Image 1 (cartoon, rainbow, N blue to C red):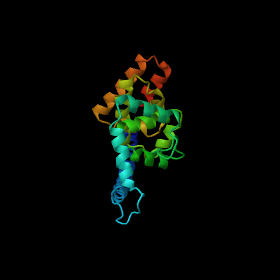
Image 2: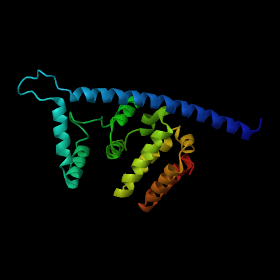
Image 3: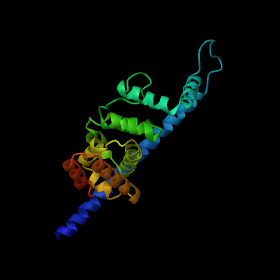
Image 4: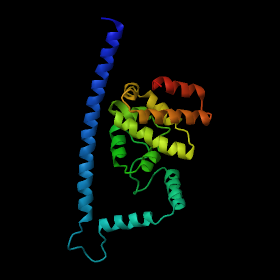
Length: 215
C-alpha cells in the first residue's frame, strides 16, 4: 500500500474519531443545558409560604439583571476590569480563574452565556495550559466558537491572541479540526494571524502557529 493511501486512511480515521468525540461532547453539553434550564425554572417559582423579610432567589436575580441593564458601557467596562483584577474571585464568580481539569473547563465554558464572557474567560487562561484543558474533547464546534470570539474582541480591542492560539496549536486535535472548519472560521484565523503581525508579535511564534494549524 502506497504512503499516500496510508496517509489518506489515517486522516479518515482521525476524522471519524473527531466526529465521535464531537457528538459525545455535544450530547453532554445538551444535558448540562437541560439541567440548567430546569434549575432556572425552579428559581423563578417562589414558595407560597415565604416568611416576611425573605426574598425569592428569582427576585434577586431579576434585580441584579435590571441593575446590569442600567449600567453605562463605561461602567460595564469598569466592572469587567474589576473582575479581572480580582482574579475572578467571590461568590458571584460564574467560573474558576484556572480550572484544574478539562471537565471543569468545559463545564465552565458551557455555563457562559455571551461571547464577551467567553472572551474574558479565555483572557484569564492566557498563562494556563489551555491545550491540556481543551484535551481530546476539542471539537470543530468548540474551535469555531473560540476563533469567532477571538476575532470579535481581539480585532475590536487590538489585543494579541497569540498566547491562546499558541495553546490551541499545541493541542493534538487542532491540526485535523482545522481541516473541518468552514471558510468563515478559516478566514477568522487568517485575520487573527494578520493582527499578530500588525502588533509585531514574535515572528517565530507566528510561524509555528501557522505550521501547526496548517495555514
